[in-house]
Every structure is written in structure tokens, then in C-alpha cells.
Length: 82
Image (tube, rainbow, N blue to C red; front, side, top):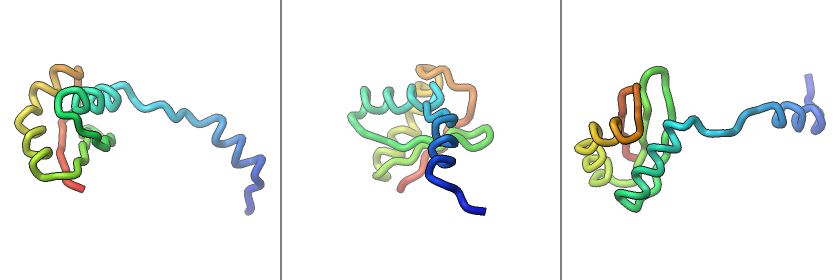
């Protein structure tokens, strides 16, 4: 089975590329408070926050409860380096 470019374009047009509000809220919070860009993904009932440095990961771990409250999260946070 081969896809034509028109088929691929149709599939991509139907796809919703908007990030969930929780991810946007976390990214904005970290950018505002820590002047850092992060990657965020959702896996089942966990929100995974990937950062570039161990020091930022540890700082965010300490601020985890504040992040959950400020962003209105209902899922657990996990912080990863990489």
C-alpha cells in the first residue's frame, strides 16, 4: 500500500496539532519562573517533563507541588534529564 502526497495531506489536515492545555501551562510556568525551555509529554496518568540539566530537574522537583497547583494538574509529574 502506498500513500500519495494528496492522501498524506488529507490525513495531516484532519489531525489536531494543538497541545493539551496542561502542557502549555507547564511550559509557560517554567519559562516565566525559571527562564528555561522544556519538553513535556503525557503518558497515561503521568506528565513527563524533560529538561536539559540536572540542576533544573532538581529545582523543578522541589517546586513540583507549586507547579501542580499553579497549572491545575490532576496527573503526577515526573522529571527527566535529556
